[in-house]
Image (cartoon, rainbow, N blue to C red; front, side, top):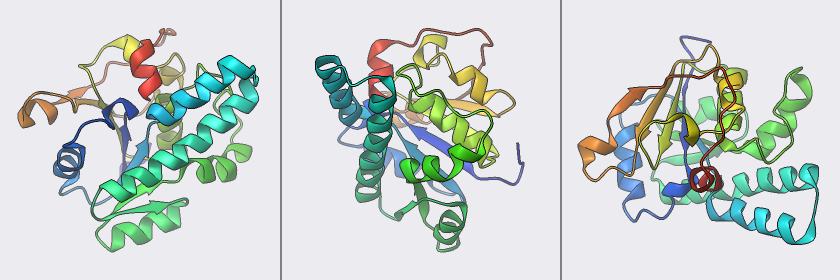
Length: 208
């Protein structure tokens, strides 16, 4: 972990239906000089799951398509959040931060460039959700912190079973961004990392 690294914010796709998402996310990121947002899959990833269920694409092909879906949701976040710009590399993200903006990671491009160089890449299965991918990004970058923005309070089954592996050694925080009040949505909890595999809740996993 790098103390001087950026803060990776994993934005759960289950939050994409909030009409006030831009305001809540913008308020949370205000004052953060180097925010790197990793968008979850949401309904776009759900569509890939449905296609795989019907057409039996196989985990490798379905994984690749699901990762491409994260490129679509990243562009959605850029369109939604004022001052946000897409970044596929560390250099591009640094340029965004120098201009005072928020970098939103083009995860498919980052995966294509970085995964072949990593001796311990994320598994290409449905068990690997965008939560584990965000933790992998934070480790690979390396980031100073990983903040999980979710639709629920912290609980072990709200992340996939690979999350503990890739988040080991990271400073992880948890924010329920679906809280009923601004104070609730901004309450941060230090994440308690489990070192045993956990089964992720279906609704939260689907939303990323």
